Picture 1 (cartoon, rainbow, N blue to C red):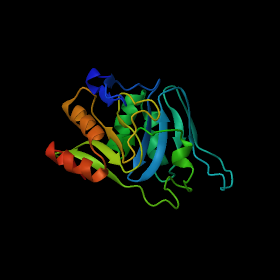
Picture 2 (cartoon, helix red, strand yellow):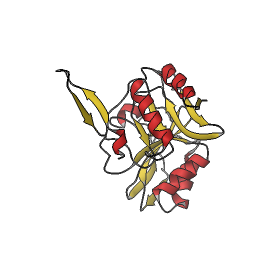
Picture 3 (spheres, rainbow, N blue to C red):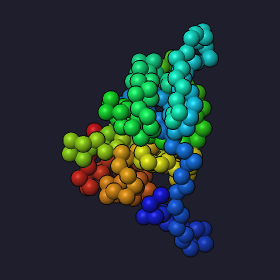
Picture 4 (cartoon, rainbow, N blue to C red):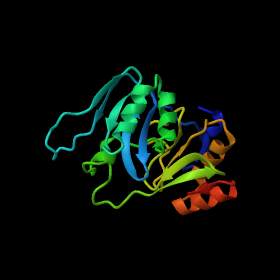
Length: 212
């Protein structure tokens, strides 16, 4: 973790301490197609399988053994993209880049997975909670990240913070650049200073970035 990401915390007695984020023991990212949760993918050997809602009659599930990725695919409409990427690539980093090239976006989820999947229907869309909103972060014509209006952490592709650490209620942010890049560090600062999605969008413009 980049030491520049240490965050100043003000204690109740008025003193301050510097705290650095703690990395998860393995990388874990969710893939989205706009507001639709497509898959949750972990960087460890295991099985990639399709999600089966409890009210759907059991059927044959697609499964893929992998020496670098395990997880669950939730959206049948884009499942071929995820299974294809995991099968084609030989490591987690290359797989992430292939998913981004296919038009998906990535984010670290907070808390346990059931918090994000309890209301899912036969596809990854939420039922009865309204549609999740998301925006890509643009630097000119380049997509450098994405954010959603759901509670969650800020992360990059190289590592993700421990579950529920430094979570913001107003949004989840993922930057597709390393944590030592200028764009990441500036967005990291904004993430902790902003109080809602609209504030974050406005501050991005001051950095020469745009939410789209």
